[in-house]
Image 1 (cartoon, rainbow, N blue to C red):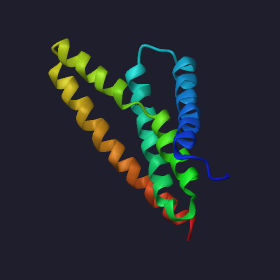
Image 2: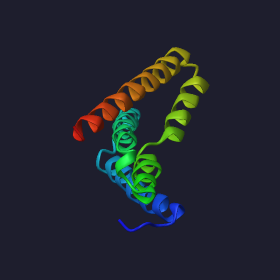
Image 3: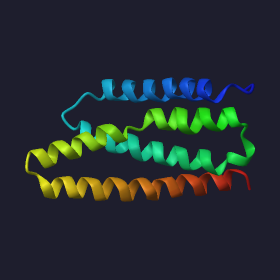
Image 4: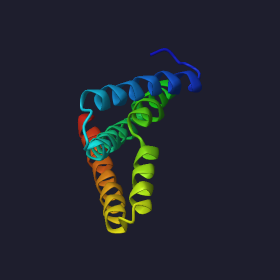
Length: 123
């Protein structure tokens, strides 16, 4: 990929990542959107882990396209946050707490797994 200005690389990657997220949410349009949002955020965290592990092999444009763009557009922290806020508003404090703890913990674990996988790719 030729060097692009960062904002263009992020915008192009973001369009791709958000488009993929939208397509998956449309295909799997179910009552369990919370589960799908969870899975999207976990997969996106792993993807970002791989991208970050490859930083020294990527141009700035490639890194920002894949990291902030694709992975950032694919994941959706804001939807997760609104889902938790709705649970709190509905008085489901335990569910909100579990959702927050599990999502944050599993996302970090999968980011680490992605990072390790990315490092192994280059060995």
